[in-house]
Length: 74
Image 1 (cartoon, helix red, strand yellow):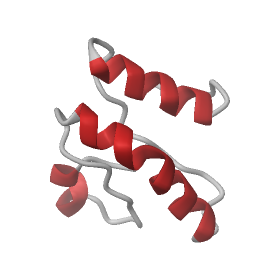
Image 2 (image 1 turned 60 degrees about the horizontal axis):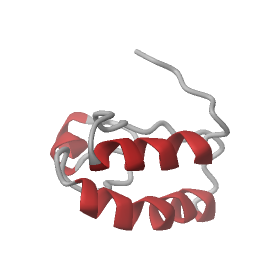
Image 3 (image 1 turned 90 degrees about the vertical axis):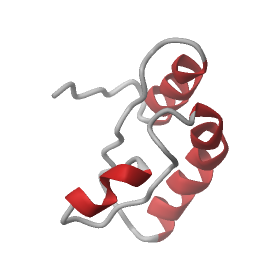
């Protein structure tokens, strides 16, 4: 899962979840994006996580919960 502005940089299948600073859009698209990944048969999903302040923290929490708290920092 990536931000809209990252799509052109990626050479792998991707699912955009909105612009980097648009936390409201990300929160709306997150679970449908995860369902989409599941429907496509993805076994591993990497997510570009938002900043952990304000509404970004809420999106971040949803992502790490969906990942079973398995976080890889790069």
